[in-house]
Image 1: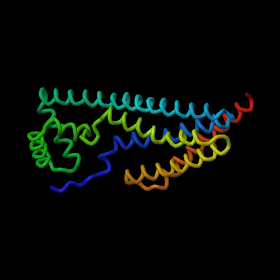
Image 2: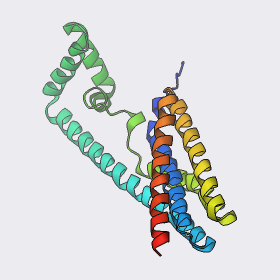
Image 3: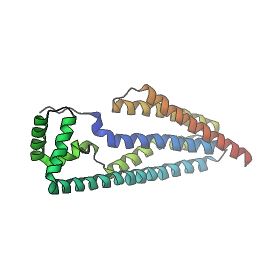
Image 4: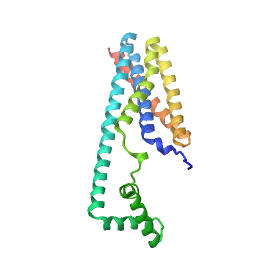
Length: 228
């Protein structure tokens, strides 16, 4: 049997991974640039960067877990509701399924045949898929999303943390800024490629907002550094 892979199969973990890596790069690099612009000691910058990595990874994992768990709870409730309706209102559910297929272009007779055969094969799965749009490729997986988000955030934040341990002053600011923008551009291109989308807009979009965040934190750091 021929199995044709689709990029949508990985949309759950891909979204969490790309979001996590993007946040890891932007938040940690901006943190390093802002603190360095305030003329802080290298030890303080490194400690701040590492703390930002740990706190950010935990925050991303917790946020993804809570968000996707809520989605999973909703899916579970919908499954239970659909199972109850199939057991207690089978005729109404059959008519509902027939109506769905007729609206998709099938004749009345063919819609009835399809509804009856699919119901005999897997009644609950058929209704979840065709009535609610729930398939195995889109099932909420809280732990997977949390793990992917935390890991990707840590990977994204690693570069500015390493640079903070090796350089300081103006050189650190320049290296972190350039590396962050290059990584963001690469991440935008990778995300677009994995998702099967054109690369141009994602690259420009993620690079622009990353540059804006870096510029804002650098300005704030300079202002507060001058005041102190």
